[in-house]
Length: 464
Ligand code: GLU
Image (cartoon, rainbow, N blue to C red; front, top):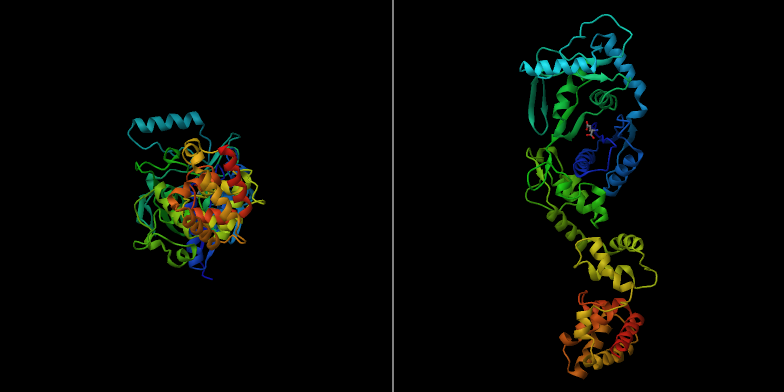
């Protein structure tokens, strides 16, 4: 074990999106690689927008991706007593103050400041106030006015701002609830987080949080801000660029290993390698190879990776995944060929599990009708002798292995003088209803003798 402690801290206000998943993955990988600790914290202080459904969706997506955590999930909503006591501490030490300015007053101040060409920042009216009127108030953090706040980001290098650029942040609202920037600091410190890896949309928060660490007497952790993910048009990734929810990709038939491999390359690289298993990543990942420029989301590449993982995947595992999918589609897989054998015939052809399920349908459901154009061409009286020969040769087999099926076809071709090019399409339409399928020998042997005979006989009846 090392003493590295990292965390993923999603707000449960929606599904786990691509950017969040990548942040979670980077944290997970570094923790695994360094044998540190990966903490999961649910940031549910926004009561109106946080839902249990979102929490469940996030946990499910992390589980699907294989991102297990060592501690948590901790819920901020269960830690209000701690946050309140920290507000009191700061008030008692004079490092925070009650602010009684009303919304209208604040708006007027903001407008006046902007008119004068300044930043729309709180002017500090209540900063030195000593009375405590019976009126609603927020608590503000007394951000230092002098000097600057700087840190060395593990990805971006030194980042520094003048403190007088920073506002006196509200740390407790009128309703008594603490605010995001404040509780993040307390939690990261109390949970012993020593490296915060998060999206670079948080850089502005970091410079506001650092003075709070100091005021609260905490050690400031290290930070690594990961560049944004953009769409192909270089705009921030959004639904316009395709699905942004990780779990929607699962529904579309993507494998988690493809998703993980894809996500890691949105910002991280290792020479010109593209294919990484989780174990590879745990060995190779480091923040040193996280680039400073934004990652660009490329759905084609994700599809390419998925295709790779389907081609090279363990057929038995793919069969288990396919079974779930076929069941949800109402396909009865109990009375049909062995699903692993089916998968083997489709691995070279399917880019997604959904495509694989489509391709697998005919194995379990005999064609009720034939593709019209195909039947007009390949199921006519002219093909009667072909079907009869097929029935004779395949019906005579005592076992139905791939080799048996191949030799039956050979015998048939010798006897009839017909070429496979003539026979193939006829068998294919008769067995699958259409003109595309895996190799015909595979289809015949995997379907099995009973199904093949039934379907050939049915095609023969169709001729009549
Ligand atoms: N809860 C924040 C979010 O979902 C992340 C906070 C953080 O990583 O510090 O954007």
